[in-house]
Length: 189
Image (cartoon, one colour):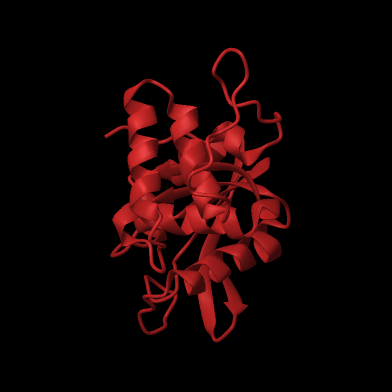
């Protein structure tokens, strides 16, 4: 099927039932790259939505380098196809899109999973990003993965890049169970 949105027909497929799960592929790939993973996730009880990003696969459109365009497309996919907050899984540059989508539209993202996002490829990064990434990596190396993720998400949400994540007596970030931050993990590297 196709979702017509702002000058392009985005090719997408939907399989399974249950909570929606949006798959965002990386650059140079397409929805078909997920292969059997789509069927496996659908069989595990997910309503899987995989689509060809603008300019890839069957979504015929000239290539688009501005990630904001891809973020808007992913948001439209969630609003018009999923019609509910979803788990969003982004791989490679799709991970950057998933991160930016979560920061821009947290109302659409129930959980976030990123696999190998090339953070250096984020467009429109601020001067604070290198420090944020260094603090996040340092927290990760000390075994404080949630704290590391919190540094990055504070930056992505536009909060102070130097703010220390809130922690309780155990050293854990006290986020509510419904928070998208609660279900994110930083990749190991």
